[in-house]
Amino acid sequence: MRRMTWVSAGAALVLLGAGACGSDSPAVCNSLDEVQNSINQVKNANVSENGLTQLKTDLQALQTDLQQLKADAKTQFTAQVTAVQAAADQLRSTVASAKTTPSAATLGNVRTAVAGLGTSLQQLGDSMSGTC
Image (cartoon, rainbow, N blue to C red):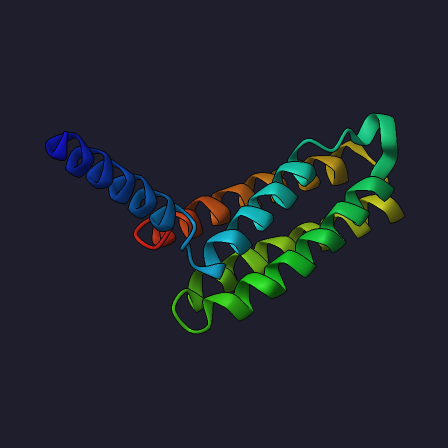
């Protein structure tokens, strides 16, 4: 009976410890998740159905999430966050150009900028893999 009590107590401690580890992720990891979600919204925007207006709204949400990520990352991932911000700025610029002068070329530039944003995010995620 005594042995069963120790086994039960040990199992309870292991479960409590495992639960505590999962909930202690740094704020920067949550911010990265938000940025990834925003970028997925941008990537999945259906421009032919919703026009560039929805894409512009998604980019505004991304900008807000990037600001939070930069604040949470402090100086640790500055270069990578800056690269994602630059790619988002490039995309914002190409969207504005495509809105002003819609054509196959300007929409192609939007697609290229979206791909560049995805690449920058992947590099940021790779850099943060040891943290998150």
